[in-house]
Structures are given as C-alpha cells and as structure tokens.
Image 1 (cartoon, helix red, strand yellow):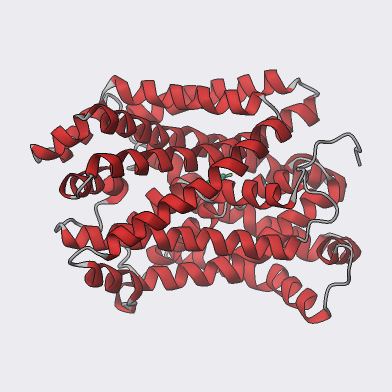
Image 2: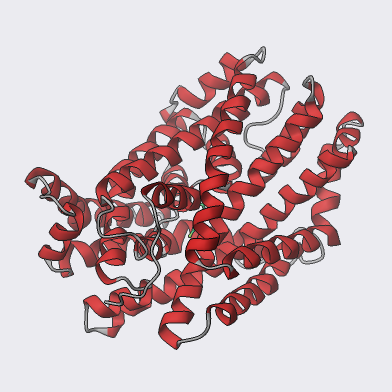
Amino acid sequence: MSTQRAQFGTRLGVIATTVGSAVGLGNIWRFPYEAGAHGGGAFLLIYIGFIFLIGVPVICAEFIMGRGTRRNIFGAFWTLHSCRCWSWVGYMGILASILILSFYSVVAGWTLEYLWQSITGTLDANSGTNNLHAAFDTFAAGPRSVMWTLIFLAVNAVILLRGVRGGIEKASNVLMPVLFVILIIFCINSLTLPQASEGLQFLFKPDFSKVDSSTLIGALGQAFFSLSLGLGTLMTYSSYFSDSTPLIKSAVTTASLDTIVAILAGIIIFPAVFTYGCEPAAGPKLVFEVLPAIFHQMPGGAIWAILFFFLLFLASLTSTISMSEICIAFFCEQTKMSRRRATLINTAIAMGFGTLCALSFGSLSDFTIAGLSVFNLFDYLSSNILLPLGGMLISIFVGWIVDRNLIRNQLGGSGRIPRPLLTGITFCLRYLAPTAILLIFLSGLDII
Ligand code: PFF
C-alpha cells in the first residue's frame, strides 16, 4: 500500500467530491426524461428501491475495494485476487468511463451554449418566436455543438491537471453547496406554478400499469448512472479517503443526496411541463426545449435561465472530473505515466469520440448501429449494460471472493460494525444485487 498517495483532506471534501460525482446531468437532465418516458411515479418508486437495495451495497463494495487497496479499479482487482481475469472488470470500467465522458460532454456542451444564449438574450428571442424545437435541432446539428463539447472537455482537463487535492477537492467544496441552493430556489419557484399539483401527481403517484421490462432496465441503468456506480469511479475516489472515513455512512449520504437532487429536479421540471402544456416524454431534449419556454414566461426569466444553465454546467463538471479520474489513475499507476500526459490522452480520446457523438445529431444522424445513433449507442451501452454488469461483478467479487476480514475492517473503520448490518450488506452483495441485476437483464432480453 503506497503511503505517498494523495488523500482528500477533510470529511466535507469526501462528501462533496463523491456527491459531486454522483450529482450531475444524470439527475437534472437524464432523470426527468427517463421518469417522463416511463410514466413518472412507478419509475420513481422502482428507482428509489434500486438505489437503496442494490446501489448502496454496491457503493460499499466499491469503497471496500478502493480504500482497502488504495489502487485504481484495475489495480484493486489485481491486488485482491491473483487471477488476472478479474482485471477485465477494470478494463470494462475504463471503457465505460470513456464512453460516458464522450456523450456526457456533448450535453454539457449544450448547457454552455444555452448559458451563452441566455446571457446574450438569443434564447429568450427564440422562445418568443415559439420555435425552440427547431432552434435546438439546428444548434445540435451544427458546428457549435462540437465546439462547445471541445471547450467543455478542455475546461475539464484544466481542473484535472491541478491534481487531486488542489483541483477536485477545492472545486467541489465551492461548487456543491452553490448547486443545492440554486436547486432549492428553483423548486420553490416551480411549486408556485398553476399546474404544480398535476406535475407532482405525475411524479409521485405510481401507475404500475406502465411498468414493463424496459422500465426496470431504465430504472436500473439510471440508478447506476446517477450514482456513478459500476465503473470504478467511487472505487477510485475512495482510494483517496482517509482511514477514518466511515464508509457505510458515506455510501448512504451519497445515495440519499443524489436521490434528493433527482427528486428536486423532478419537482422543478414536471409542474412546469404541465403548466405550459409540454410533453413529459420528450426524451433527451426535455430540459433544453421545455425549460427555455418556461423561463420566457416567468418574471425575470433571463436570470433564471442563466442560473439554471450555470448550475447544469457546474454539476456536469464535478461529474466529468470524477469519470476522467478512473482513466487517469489507471494510466498513472499501471503504466507509470505522468498525470499530465494521462490527462491529455484521456481528453484527446474523449474529444474524438465526443465529436462523433455531437455529430450524431447532424451529419452523422443517418449512421446507426443496431438502430441507435452513436450518442444513443454510447449512452445505452454504458448506462444500461456496462454499469449494471460492472456492479454485478463487483458485488460478486466482494461478496464471494474478498476476505471477510477486509470487509469487516473497512466497513467498521475505527469501531466495530454491528453484526446484523454486516450480514445484511453481505447478503445484498452475495445474493440480492447479482440476482436482481441478472433477472432484469434477462427480462430485457425477453428471456423471462
Ligand atoms: N453520476 C453522474 C450524473 O448523474 O450525472 C454521471 C456519472 C459520473 C456517471 C461519473 C459515471 C461516472 F463515473
């Protein structure tokens, strides 16, 4: 175990960075449209079930491996088991992190364009002519979308180059509380809208007739995506935790705060959707097409728009910092590459793939694989397949293979972990999480 490895300095730093990784476009951009597409309340309920029954134990598993070995995902598997076959879970995580960084940066780039348009007044002018739909399509298909993707990735790289403690921790400590405050202000605003109760009913009243296997896969994928789980992000971050960081408490806090932000985003968006007669199942464009129209009709709308897109940008940045860290830690520790070079390589790959994702709304829109554009393919492959699969393998590994003493010591920290709690987590990791994920996969393939 390396003693020179960087560590997060404070407990607030630990929470701010893990929550900063979890909270992002997944909560504010992806959750509302997934919930909208799958009927609202029932999706939310299933999603919350997955977060706490599968998500929290798998977070604990990642934390145990990360802090227990103080290595990146690849090295963690290698340290804990001599069979190199497990390292493939590490490669899978690195692949997922690159796929996600690529399409995620496109959406983060959209937030920068909309922030820019809000500042210059173009967004409001477009809303006035009621052609937001066309305006979004024209923008997403054009070169500016690529430009913003590249700018976003460059900003991400600059923060990463400043190192673990100096860059990530400082940025997160400042950015996360700002994010919460702006979200709460938006919620209060949305609750005063005329059709707020219809929006809240849609979000909170479950209609189980709308549940099918795609709802289950969607909710599972969303849970893993939103928690940054199954690809080694939390494993890498926990490798920087101090020995006294309480792992279970941090896992529950991360999951709870992440879920609260998703629900807040729902409370912000659905009352507005119903008030202004928009379509809840509008898909990935939901936030970008619906909200500007809402801002236009709100008093002080331009300011709200600037605040909102700034918030989305901040949230994206703390998430992309964390997903890049998987790849960077891998290069630095497995190949002894400098942090600077590793960051540049990671950024260059993401810039290449990110450009393809951005172009899939324009000149590459006809290029599909299995009926999916490059953007949708990267999203589906990573969120709905690689992350749950990674989570399943990580839970099997920790549940069945890792030494029980390591689990007990890591979860217990300086004190002793209560026996029922240890048994509960072990049960989830050994049986519940792997079986549930497998069944959901099989149901998605129409095998059961
Ligand atoms: N959890 C992030 C979000 O909800 O926006 C997305 C994410 C970050 C996924 C980091 C994966 C990851 F490694």
